[in-house]
Image (cartoon, rainbow, N blue to C red; front, side):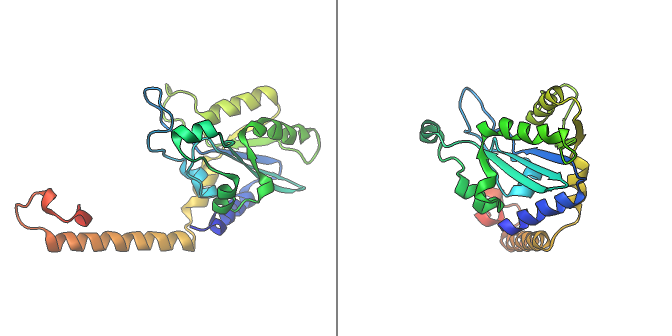
Length: 219
């Protein structure tokens, strides 16, 4: 997908939002085991990816819609030479711009998020302010640990009691249910690759042959 697809996805979400709404989406946390850091495959939040094209951990996207216009912000980790030395490269502002289609002015560092969000929500005292905040509240079970989205929503509820917390999942589900031409093309190409692999396997397979005897492309 190109950056234009993700820009279009955000625009279609803006069209579904009422004025005075703000959306918060988090990319997710990389799995950590035995005191290592970011050493395991990272499963990005698919709704976040749908709107940004970014598959890096610890990134926030905020979308705010008021009667004065729409504003989108991306908050990424600030490059740290020590972390880069041990864990590899980090997402840069330039890469975030290229993938998401957001402008440079709208890509900030994580440490700026609380101050930026507080400034936007403090404007709620004005008629054009934010009165509702949407989060991806996808809790898997009653006993699961609070997600970063739940934790941030709880913090905002405490700091801004008049703010209404809402679940963004129904909005996002309705958005993603209707596939765009770019998505349909990707699905078709994936189907073509699967069909080609299956045909190759059928041509190569023999009765009683173990899987290890098949070509790598057919396994």
